[in-house]
Length: 317
Figure 1 (cartoon, rainbow, N blue to C red):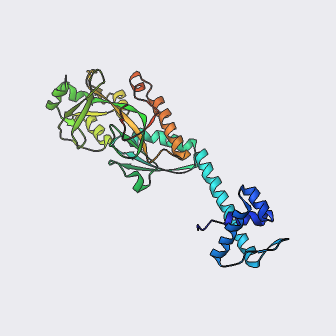
Figure 2 (cartoon, rainbow, N blue to C red; figure 1 turned 90 degrees about the vertical axis):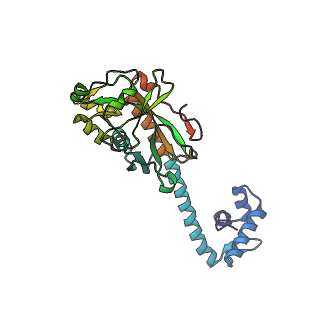
Figure 3 (cartoon, rainbow, N blue to C red; figure 1 turned 45 degrees about the vertical axis):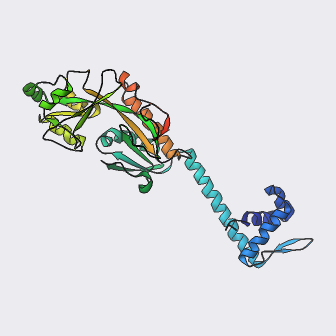
């Protein structure tokens, strides 16, 4: 017998004044209510109610136990109400894991605006270069990029951003510009430790993966940007990283536009889709709107979607 079994029936019997009235309120038979209360007394080894053919009275122990039961029932009602509110409006603590390579700068504005719009949500942001274990580390959501690994998690496509090649004006003047991916072998490429750059084919139906080399390696996009502005070499970064440097004349984009761009998908990844808390639902919807407004370009429009899908599915749909 569960610890809560019989308590709801007991409370109802005391408040209604009889087993018959309690059975009507609960929508069960009188014998069922009587059995539940009797089993509760047996489990507690105490008489809670004195039963006669004419009346029902509480024993001293029954009266004390009823007060405890009533308090527990009210606490359960408050807990249930609180959970209902959490499902209806964003509140509580939202724990996010953001990819530091591009996520910190790209997502910081969105997270700050969300926090200002929904002040009842406490936001905890963890930045890392590695994908976290959402379940083990108890994160509500992670923002990841590119093709996702198969897992039991759920992914929702947020949108994407464009990466392209840039270098300082003096670097282009001294070394010239590559005319195809193979020409990158003759250039100093500022890259992440995997030393691979990806490019969309002109028809955007495939991806070209190019092995590059250079004397500057960093996981951090901000470090790569600084090196590029110093004229050390070519960098492949999202446009939101390079736009200010381009406007200031510190960087110049590669002239060729038919092969040097890569549209990178961004995903919101979370443990499950059933009973998703309002704080997570609202944040995902907010990110989609924020990223869409941030990149109102014909190319970007092809990379925005709203459907949730399992990571076992094809994430490039």
